[in-house]
Image (cartoon, rainbow, N blue to C red; front, side):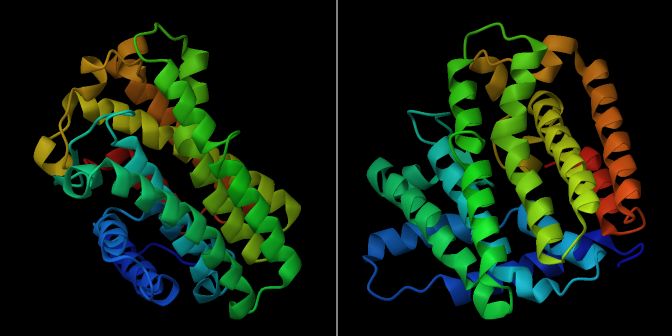
Length: 298
């Protein structure tokens, strides 16, 4: 269990651990060079690595060996990266920049960007299978593989992305918007926290409480994204602001205003911390990560 620490340093150290894991689990042999370069361009583009960090931090909060969870952490970030590559495509959100660099398709073309996303998605499931090599039993690995497919798939992230596209140029209700945010963004965060808890042999009640924590900070993360798209600094964000309004997309600020969005954000973090208390891990880095979600500017 980790007490109060330097969160920025912690995030950097865990991100470096994940990137080291990529070099272990993503080999380049017998891969066409354009595909290899396209995959590496986006996977090693930096970013917060919040999802894999949450998985490892949850294991540590429960006194688990986070090194053994690295295959799952890397798999999650592969899936997250694939979703960003596809999200930026002209047929989706049509974004030219990601993390301050030209989007994958602007560098490698639409076809190779699609294939890079496909490669990362499928390789993620090979990667998570390496949990058996780090000491976890096969039943646990099967459980996590099934959960990863659920939260990333048609009833999870992909379903949320579809609802997001269908919601463009529509006046959504708050309930419809929350559905999009829950699945497009929060579901993969929920998986990370659940995976960390399962790998650390948490009790069912702890897993349930941490699931609520993940859901709350996942929604809070997306609300903060909505806010930053209105008032954020393009240099820090690494992409243009105002894109949601330009695409006539419903967001929390558009539906309830900035002040109410900020209040909703604070309520989510309060509920997330209450869930941590119920899980008995309120004095860990997970509480600091919750605060980071609402204070970040990128």
